[in-house]
Length: 461
Image 1 (cartoon, rainbow, N blue to C red):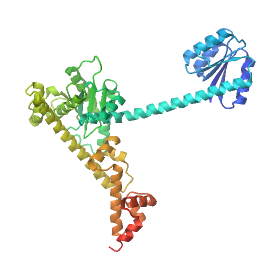
Image 2: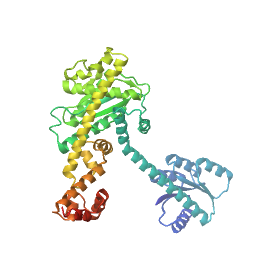
Image 3: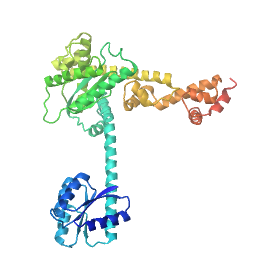
Image 4: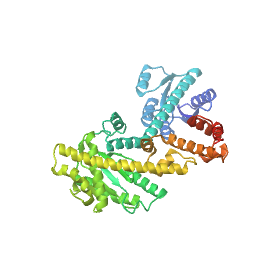
């Protein structure tokens, strides 16, 4: 139902219009009456009508002036001017105000109803368009963290030559020109071990959400998924913004207490140097990862900039060659060699972490395949978002999550059939299916034979 404001100083005119409209278009309008221009403006502000039918000549504020004020309050309102005078001057002013129609009294019922029906159709189209746009904005808003996650992972894993990087950067509104990386490490010794299962997952989710919430309004940045208690933030410097190591360190030190409270444990932050260009941002990530590892193991500071990492730092001799690129001990090919060595070490560590995470997921699947098990559920158990988990699982396991669990269930079903101790219906439920017909179709698709046929083949074994 739409709101219709009828403004006319003649009560009989207003009531006659209402009677005509309600008979011709029942249940279409909530009709509001205004006997003068001033009250029309006040009622329009209070009720925000969709359509206004305004008489030109009224006591006090005239119709055109009232329409001008109403349009200023409610720009999407549909305005219809009603007058007893067919003057060109009125029509010209009405057009300038955006009036949709101009009715000269006495008007025929067909003309008035035709105008209202057309305006209602326009309103419905506009409402549908707004709903579509809102749904699209909502979808984009929900997908944006996944876009950011994917872009961050590409930068971390040396996929900057992939044409998708530029597309994702545009979607994330994150031009890859100049920036630096932060690595947030929530895996302090004695903390992770004490938080297993749901509490561990909740702790990491809390840290992840706290980082996104705290940095989103302060920096132009993208955030990676939480992987093995670490997450990476790539920060883009906006035009005219200066990079100062002291300010970035101060930001890290400001974040740490808040994140430690969220994590209910230790958190350390490593900060990389400012880099120019998309292909150099990964160098800043490697530096930040080294700095975070040093901060965690040395336990000397909450936030550490890469330039603060000693050339030799106990177990951190692996950063020596990378640090030497800063001190000038290596140049040219040696600088590249040093950087690549550090990158390969960090990459190898990430690969080991990814393998361990997917092995954990496979263990969960093997333990629970007989239960309803969704990919999103398993992704949550290993603290990854479903999109990244899906890609990582296929890379590590060689099959999609769905194909993997299907193969496992059907393989186990074959074992049960060969043992010949359970009915086919019992086997169906035993391997995680709830519909025997669906189980039969999947079984035949995988093995090439229906369960009954498979049983008959092996009954003599």
